[in-house]
Image (cartoon, rainbow, N blue to C red; front, side, top):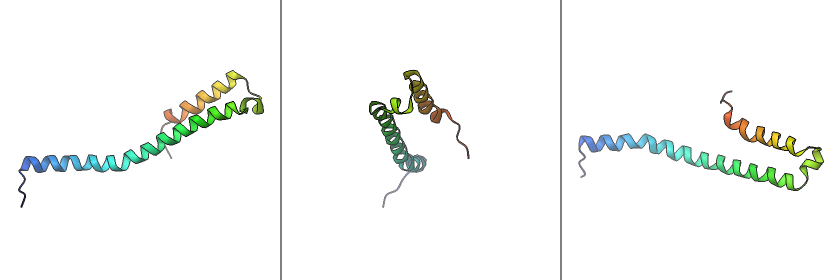
Length: 80
């Protein structure tokens, strides 16, 4: 039978909630990171394939749209 001191028991119970959060949070963050990477790659590929000409955009317009689309979701406050 294993006997733990009070200090060892407190240390074990203190780390359990953070491990639960890590187990639930890290996979979701990894998926979000992957989706963001794929999205950035796709917009670059669309430009190469002629999106600017199809939409009649100039280089400055493309850069403005790209800047808004890339930075707005990360600065938007969460809400319903």
